[in-house]
Image (tube, rainbow, N blue to C red):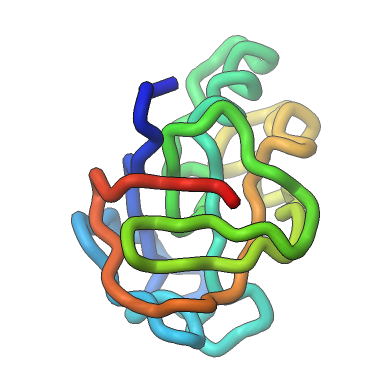
Length: 144
């Protein structure tokens, strides 16, 4: 992955079951990403590492696009910690890691057959917001 990890993609899904929108920047509030249907929900922000998507793609024998997992933020790390309590800095925004996002059957449709199995421990993490602000593609990423 990149020498200095960064935010490589941002996505929101305005309505449940609807199409996602790729963004260059997004406002992150205490309740999650503005414009995302999960705003105020149980899992306010989801993040996936590009390295994990690449590993799943190698297992599947087909590409796994960053938006196909429907995670909000894609970062240029090999992997993300799965333990609750860690911190993830996205530019000035600080998230507290809460746990793994297990892949669901939806991944079989959005990514392709075999995706649910290939994405176990690779489908990202969910987090709560400690320090709100704006996240932009290209912002530096730091795991604490």
